[in-house]
Picture 1: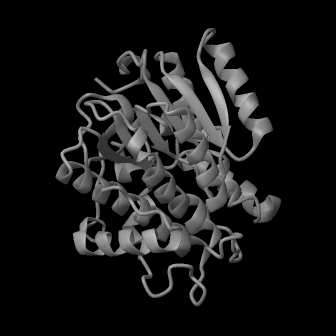
Picture 2: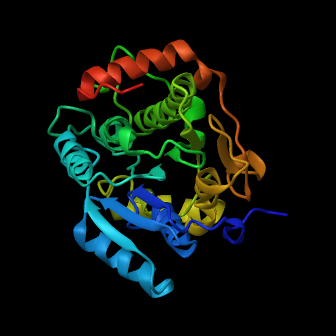
Length: 306
């Protein structure tokens, strides 16, 4: 039987923090989690869109507990402010869904921290956020960190001598690096959690090809390129709701394993129902993952407690 949202176990009494949940697969994941009874925190950079998303979720699920917290994963100051506010409230987290992202920004851009924008938004901000929030994850079975990767990781390369792509920027190659980094991070995090004896599990997922706003190519490609990208995704891919299913499976299914990777089960993992996804050998390299982890700590100034 194909896995659907109807199979999500009750999430009553659980708290889920979802980054980038104002639209696309992040919104669909937040919607389904709220429908299953979870308290959902939408962590996003656009307050207006976040409040609209929260209202839409409440309309779909009257009585749902949905809140908005300001977070821009491209800015370390925002990540630290978010984590400090959370620390002050001492609220436990059951689900940390790392979803926020942009894709294929046509020309290289730098953030205020001096990082390449895709690498900062998609990966470094999430690395820092996870390190700062790990003490708030409930140390019990069912608590999960879920990183959103991509089939793009297959041809991704971690340019250790040029992580910010100052010498070799390409819109797609840089995006692929960020998604490979997310998958390597998820696998390394699970290894470290297990070594520490933690009950928290780290899981990765990808949506296949989902027709979402990420087709705008970082909002910077212009209407023609955005229209072509969206059209191709609509033709070859699946809806955002379908694309969110592997994320929800990784987040809630009792059978989803720590260190696992889940995506659509159709041809080339482009579309279909959630199932185990293929991990390329270079994403499994523990030495490369440890090196990436060390460089990420140095770049962000966030030393993981693991």
